[in-house]
Length: 161
Image (cartoon, rainbow, N blue to C red; front, side, top):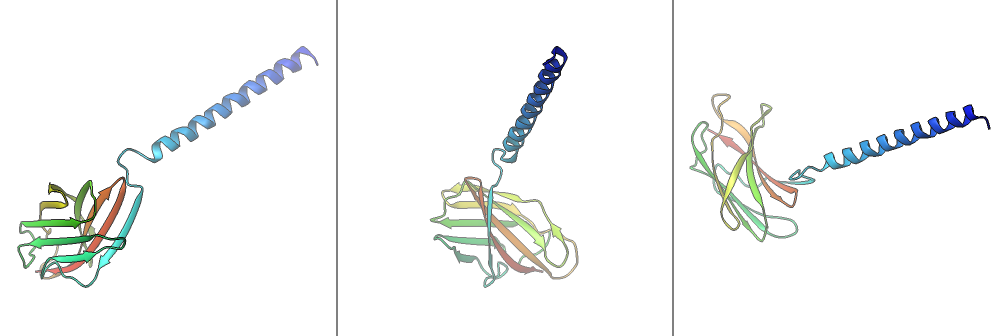
């Protein structure tokens, strides 16, 4: 082999090694970014069709065990009025909980409201239904329970006044 050919092959090998290192670094960086601390990695959803939060607290037995009781008060639920959201969990461990409202007939998601834990399994927060139309409106309330980067969502459908 000539010196020129050896130099060319050495340069080619060095460039290939740099390319492999860059690709490995990119894959590592992507993997490190895909699971950020606190990021939710699994979501399960359940709809409680047989209960109306505008009439009474709703009690739901969850698959796998545990009971969730959700309540919005005072009733009847009226837009732009302060409401107290209560969430009680029995045999369901949770690190945090939140409530998000969605307008059903109008695509209107609203920012989640964090619920404060006041005792083990007892969460509370102050919320209000925003106004967007006059008259009754259909809503979906999503109570989210978060534990070990897993989110469990229990949703309730109701009408506001």
